[in-house]
Image 1 (cartoon, rainbow, N blue to C red):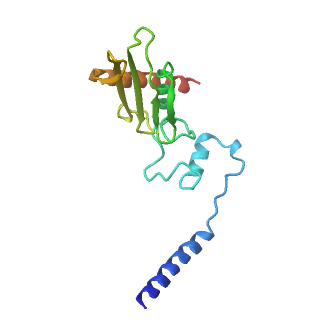
Image 2 (cartoon, one colour):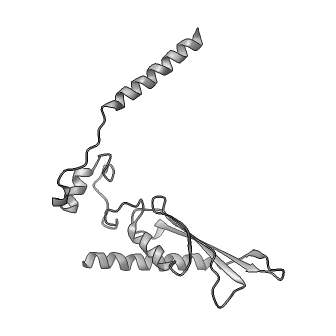
Length: 175
């Protein structure tokens, strides 16, 4: 008897949740092509299709322009520009992860590098980016073996990406 009551209670809860969501509709804003960017953001706050709910004002001035990606677009573009010499294995604009494939510099065929960049913020900040660098060297038998890399290498790459992101931001403000 208790099992039947539990089943009935669970069924009622699920039915109640389904009924509660039945009337929810999401409408696209009409005539949004005639609104300025600020007006579009103001109208979209708190809506399902908007940028989110902001309790203490909107996005900061270091935020990238509204874009469909989930991370700062300046950091994203700067990372792609900086790693453009390497083949990419994966790029997730919503999660903010860019993974390169192994790259062997033409002058050194016995070593190769791989990089993973994590974009951690929607704002252009120095702590919104992490770079992991991996290095392998070929041993005498031709097998790739992991080798150490200078701890400064990842920091230098982060600084290069941040510099490029700032350049992109300044260029966008000048337009």
